[in-house]
Length: 604
Image (cartoon, rainbow, N blue to C red; front, side, top):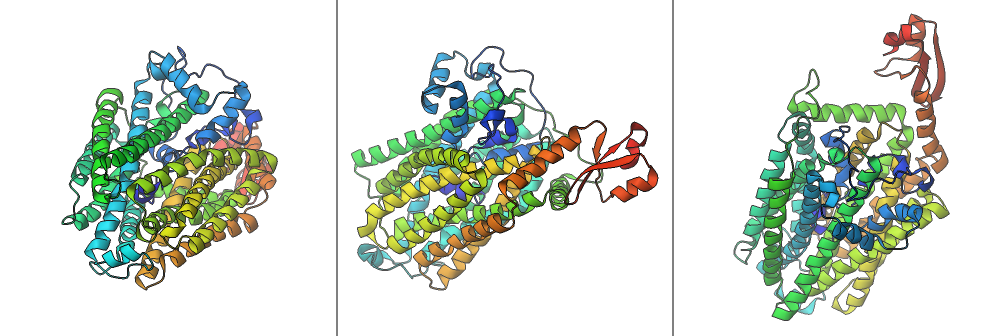
């Protein structure tokens, strides 16, 4: 539920949040604190802590990596900072420590304007997500009213089976989600290539910020006569949100050339988004109760959108027209490619590399694709059940969302402790098992307004699951990535999260239209988690073996004169051209050879 809009954004590309730091290296890994850098010059406001902007991963790769931070904003707040706190021997909480730094600093982020712009943009995207939650609840209720479902809403003993525009009201949001997921899957590689290979990064950020503001202004005028037009407007709105996130996260790798500083920046961005969402939720819930509109979903949506418009006007404006700076291109368009094909070719090349060289990662991505495809639909269905079956008021929806947000904190703590107690793979398996149990329990219990207390308990479970799963999933993946390959392989990670994001909402919509109960539909979503659990348990090697593949690979490439054999070239091919070739490591289809300088060009 905190992810509701993110979830519908790209299939929800951005929520959820924040293992952006995992792109930096295993030195900042959640599960390997002993390998962290001891550098201390990384304070958010310490003088001279930032060097020249660093250029590394491309916009597409960084966007995919860091966009994950918007998908689970609260999920990783504690997890990202737990290791840092332990190493520093600090007792204060992450939030307290962050604000101590922020308030003490006369110039936050050491005057880094791009970092300040990133922080304000992150805050605004979180607030837009909160506004989207109330907007979707209002759209569902208006659709039910238009379909003549009032009698069902009074009794709440049955689901509304009436149709409007040929569909049940409960199918409309998931149908929108399918459209956004398909559109994003097809277009995001092109958008990423435009940001990578042109100088339009800031222009795209500005234009999409203005478009998002315009969409939210329009949503203020939602009513019973225009609800369907606004429902359709969600498609370009959520797609624009995804494009905007892509442009924003393209700035991430250049915020600083200090990895520890980047790590703290990332954690602070998550805290900012977390607190912004809680702050706005608290304002909305308290205000609608004071005003007396707590039972009016449309009036609540209007009020929340007014807050979103005011927030976006101020913070998007400051971020994109005062703070973010223009940037040159990341790289030229590769020979033989165009802006349209460059992103897709890069994606295909990375997939081929994984298939040939990294078998553990290959099957891990299958798990990622299954689970992350279902997560957005789980949130959508839960909101639909609360609005349509549980008869939640807007105030109750807001309270449930705050419970989810707050519950991600102990969930993230569990992720850290379980990873140390057993190992990251076992922790992830337990997290998936808890997801399966939680989803099926909700399907059995959430059958009417008399079970609202159980719904709040499920909100706690949903928050714990999110806080546990997200850092565990990304943390284990990072450990399997060889160094200097993190940007490329984290890019494919986010692509995997999105590649079948259209499938669960499509199946849900078809089943719902066929008359299958919402709660049965909810239970079937646990099958995606089961498939992920089976893939992780039986196809991905043991934790030690999975991590060792990357470590052996790194050691091989660190040796003098070590090179990789790519593009189908085999050890035999190289041996036929020169006898001074020695293979000193072979992992599956990976062959790394030691070759003398005189024959280096042959192997390359």
